[in-house]
Image: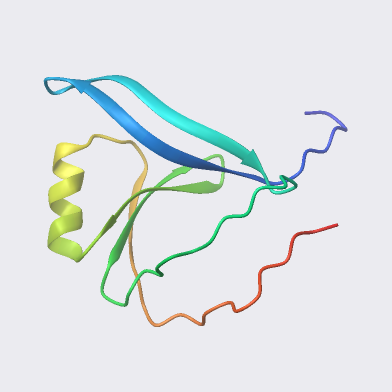
Length: 102
């Protein structure tokens, strides 16, 4: 906003609570990269998996990680989002060290 700068952040989706087929509460937690908390990546997406992303304001948000394209398309048919992008996971280099900007 204006001349203000904010540190990078990320959001973790903790759950969606339903009443029948209607979502009544979506719980997400926002974290700044400057937090003292540690987060570990337990498993990386494997080649052939499909990222279901939404695109908004030039940014992508992961909505779902599917085992394959058929599962991704099935998930998309049950979950309505605008600006969806399906991205096939390919062999990607693994980042061995994550650093936080000072």
